[in-house]
Image (cartoon, rainbow, N blue to C red):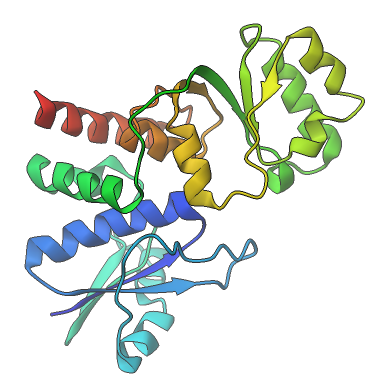
Length: 248
């Protein structure tokens, strides 16, 4: 029975959705199809580096009904639903429970495939960086500035900075602080998400704030990063342990 995954969100979210979908379909020996949903405020586009196959019209229509989402609101404990002739996947798949159900060998193999798909680099160019996730993740400019000021107070002198709002770091409020801390920006402006991910992977360690893109740099690129979000922290520990076990 074919499997259809409905991806949504940016590259970080798509990688969770595709990893689970690939494992789910492979476990059942079924063909995997993918649809990307743009009906979200950010309208993040589908990655053009991750191979996929589009489903037939009738499967697209069923996926558009968002039945797994409806079932979840009614109390279902899983983010997929089996119908006659097709299984629909539609969720975030960020919990460690989502991946603990598969064999470590299958998970490690699927992660290796993602590394190849995204051409994850192995060489580290920077020892330490700070990821400042800004932009519309804050209610207003003042809140974003306050966040940068609080983060900068705790970082080592000379740290490299990565952000999705480089103009803000050049503002009169923040530029003197960066100069005092001898911090410098590693520019990612204009990069597509896959290139930002590969840049993250060039760091030995990054101090971040729960970015899913940084999550994947920590798993696929072995960049040292920690997460305050318990769900992300647990899933990171599981996936990194799985990869370490395969290398041992």
